[in-house]
Length: 342
Image (cartoon, rainbow, N blue to C red; front, side, top):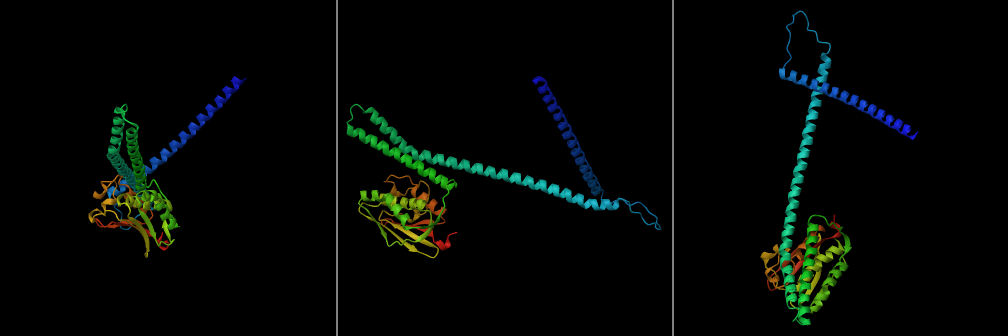
């Protein structure tokens, strides 16, 4: 009984499939016939246009020429057919242009992404080469002298290798962060926020380093003005500049932070007593991995100022420098006032 019921169901499904196939075939042939009729109509029109003016049959002067019965119909149909043909051709041309434009744009994007990846790999290999070689050398020396080396020597090699590994970790984090900011992979919302907590957070990030060199960070008469910025990212941008000031300025010196309100922007200045920067290097110090002549004696990645500039640009602000060799540096952060924020 079940077998008979199953056969019956299969037969019904087969019959329904055949019917659906027949209906689809009839519809297909009907559409094909309509398409052939349209094509024949276009061919007839093209032949008429190729012949030029229609031929006139000789007629008697006394007898008025008779207009064919279907003349009005043809005269009415010709403009419509021309419009239809022009519309179809223009649509095809438009679609083809869009396809070619998208293909060219995707090709350009692929080339750009390839160049970015190659540049990133080149920068990584160049910057990681030195600390990685130092780690390998420390491990080899430690391994070769493990038997006759005292505990103090072992700790020294391990500490140096750990410092080099930390340098590589900071480099990777900063480089990936900069790359994501460049390509828009990291997006943060800038809003109207008070500036004093942001500056305090930046100072707190470098306070321990400044105390280690007996340096003073002095925030002078800074009112709690509301500015267009993101507190987290702006604090990181200011901290990068403060970290450079602590690193390159002599011990016991002073770092001043003060603010000046302007028409469109509010300028926050970080002034140090470091070695200073030549005017020819003003634009170079904001480039990725660039380190000035005065900075070669100190450890660093050359990404701090580059990141700070990217952050300020994302907030519709900018970062400039004013410095002379031997007279310290002034880094100016320009943040939008609330009335000018978009």
